[in-house]
Length: 114
Image 1 (tube, rainbow, N blue to C red):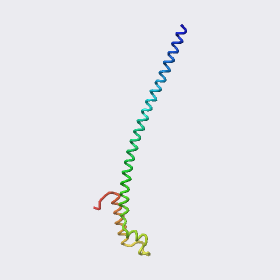
Image 2 (cartoon, one colour):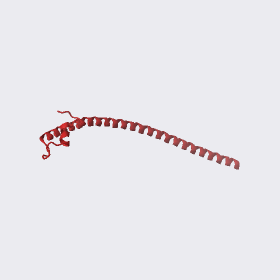
Image 3 (cartoon, rainbow, N blue to C red):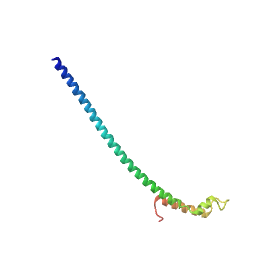
Image 4 (cartoon, rainbow, N blue to C red):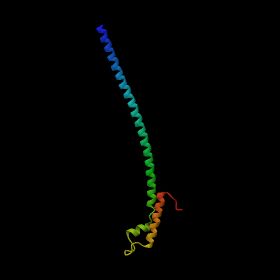
C-alpha cells in the first residue's frame, strides 16, 4: 500500500511538473509571437516615417533651390561692395531687397505672385 501511495504521489508530482513546464512553454510562445508582431509593426511604422521624412526633405530642397535663385545679383553686389559708403542703403538696394524678400516669402509659403 505504501508503494502505491508513493507511486501516486510521484505521478501527481510528475503531472504537476509537466503542467508547469507546458504552461511555461505556452507563455514563452505567446510572448515570442507578441514580440515578433511588435517588431513588424515597428518596422512598418519606421519605413512609413522615413518615406514621409524623405518627401519632406525633397520638398525643402526644392524650396531652397528656388530661394537660391531668388536673390538678384545686384543685391549681392550691393552688400559685398557697397556703392555708397556714407549712406546706409540706397533706394535701389531697398527695392531689390524688398523684391527678393517677397519672392522668398512666396516661395516658402507656396503662393503664386498674384
